[in-house]
Image (cartoon, rainbow, N blue to C red; front, top):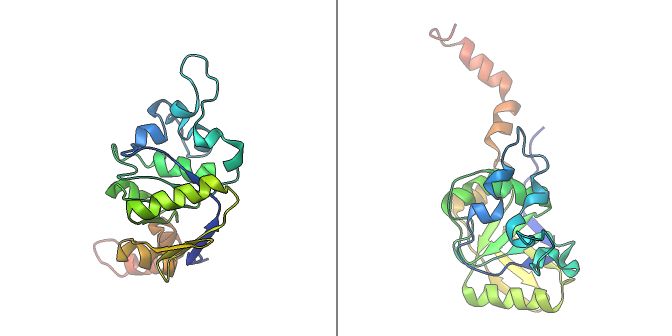
Length: 200
């Protein structure tokens, strides 16, 4: 069965403070001792969500009850930098995020997110700051990301966003997961293999 295209994402947002948020902050390495990615969501941003000594919750936005149902993460510049671990976008997806809006993204994080069907769109600092302020003022504010029009709309706020054409095409066509494409085309793969003398 083909993957459904992703043309729009709608939800409420949580503003994440800071710049250059790396993959180790998104998912600390000690939580990566897993066979599958299941269960990683609870450890997203763990070291900034919990005090390292008391293990009590900090004032991080993800601990704020006002944002408990947020499905869109709003961040600053160079989000997802650092190591290339796929666990970072996996943990965010397992946490419940369905899209990320930021000033910019690290390239490998971006690619790993796209293959999960987790759209990442970027815009100017002014637009991001305005969206963070609007979401902080009203956590119930609905955010719409339109990947066809390449816009973000939140109440009276509306602005253009960007993403690489290759990622946009993959999401809009439902061809963002290469493993799923291989599985869906297994019969064609086997037929091609059978026709090759050096495979038989």
